[in-house]
Each structure stands twice: as C-alpha cells, then as structure tokens.
Length: 244
Image 1 (cartoon, rainbow, N blue to C red):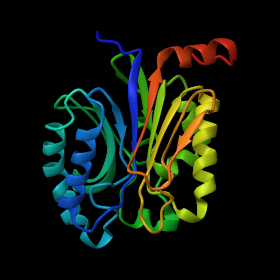
Image 2: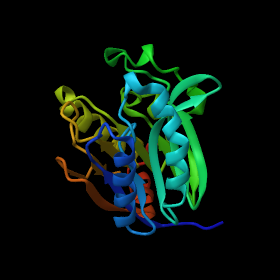
Image 3: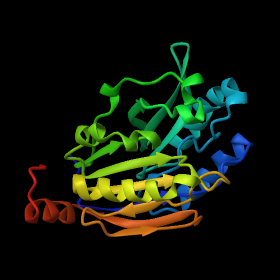
Image 4: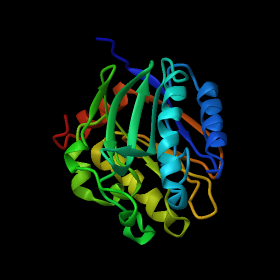
C-alpha cells in the first residue's frame, strides 16, 4: 500500500454563483492550480449553493459534475459536498475523489434547522460518519453544522486529518474559528476547514495543526499548508491523552 508522510493541504474559498456550470469551472480551475498531490477541501454544496428553488436541477447536475471532477483530480484528493438524489430522496452528500474513483461518501446527518435544511434534505445515518484511509492517512469529514456535535468528534478520534466543508453563517464567524481550532487541538489532528465567500458566510477557511497553529484567510480563494505525519505523532506522543 502506498503511504504518504507529507502532503500539501489546500482549503478553497469562493463565491457560489447561481450558474452551476460556472461554479464547476471555477472549482476545476482551482484544482488545476493546486499541487499535483494536494488534499483539497471545497466549501459545502460548492457546485450549486443550497438552491432550494432549483433542487431537482441541482441534483441532476451533480452526476455531470462528478464525471468532470473525477477526470480532473488525478493524484490529488478532493473533498466536497453536493446535492444528490439517492433512492428517490435528496441528500447533502460529501464525496472524496482520487484518480478517477470515489473513495468515500457520507450524507450530512445533522441538518441546520435554522436554515430550513430539514424541510428540503433527508438526513443521513450517523453510521456513515467514519474515517477512511488515503495512502496511510486516516481522514474524516464533518459537514458544517455537524461540527457543533461533540460526540461526532469522538467518532473521528484517531483521524490524522478532519475536513470541514461548510457554508457557515457570518454572524457566527467566531464560532467557526473557535470550533475548528478546538477540534484540531482536542483530536490532535489537522483540520482543513473550507467556507464559501458569500454575503452571508464567513469566508474564513483555515488549516489548523494538531498543536493549534493555524492559518486563516478572508476571501482568498486558495489557502495552502502541509500535512506532516510526524507532527501528528509528535503531538500524540508528548501530550498523550490516549489517541492512537
């Protein structure tokens, strides 16, 4: 099995346009600009936004976008979410794509009622929230509002990287920064948080290390750092709280 001790990390932050094709083109352009072996996280529903008035159109666009994205990621790993029809129901599903394959999917389980998500989406099963292995790197995903549920942090305990694709409300920007930083420190892992640059979202994507070191942006479309396996191992060795 191929293992990676170091990988570039990329958090994307861009505006969600009403033109789905424009969003896809923007995402592919940013993927192409990223290092060829990067782990990339894009904002929640980056292809369409929530588009409640165009739900069927958004769901129909997802398979088209997936085909193009699968042909674009190459050796990179891309994590994003999309409005997806499954068995006659609509879900907000996270995808992890690499070298033409879908490595992992999970549907959002904790729907944000303040934003009426529960009136439009079906909730996924919590059992879908689990880590997956990517070249020896243990990766987990929490989709936006799921970040607020501490028992889900425990579910992903032991991950080397946790991705957080989000459309996080601007009025609660400090919560997004605090929770993503706390998650990295508590779980002694890297956190790649990606938020959209919309009028009502924070545009505060970030990459946080297991030691709590962080880089944040405010509307910059690409934020880049590096994953180092030894940093995770060092944190867990010197401040041993039982995470393996």
